[in-house]
Length: 119
Image (cartoon, rainbow, N blue to C red; front, side, top):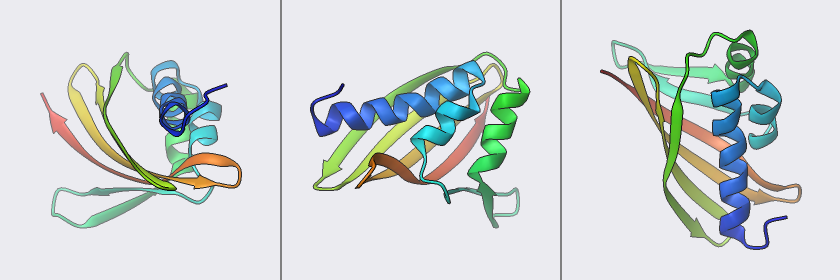
């Protein structure tokens, strides 16, 4: 078991990115707080709120192409953390900003805001 906050945060974010990599919605669900929406913009600049369950379903469907991921930054302030993640797919690259809180059940992702870059 991880013995520092940074290790616990990295373990939580790793559950998320490994869930994406291996099509495992259970790992994604484990990393996120239950009522999280994924925040992004549509082509017109409007806010799009996607429930976490949609990401889980996409992962479980096997629809995600091969990808690699990297945690590029972790910043911790007391019981709050920010993690930056890059997910690289064949034609897209996702850049995630993840906010985590140290809840009574451990570190959980409570907010995900992302953008997509087409290659």
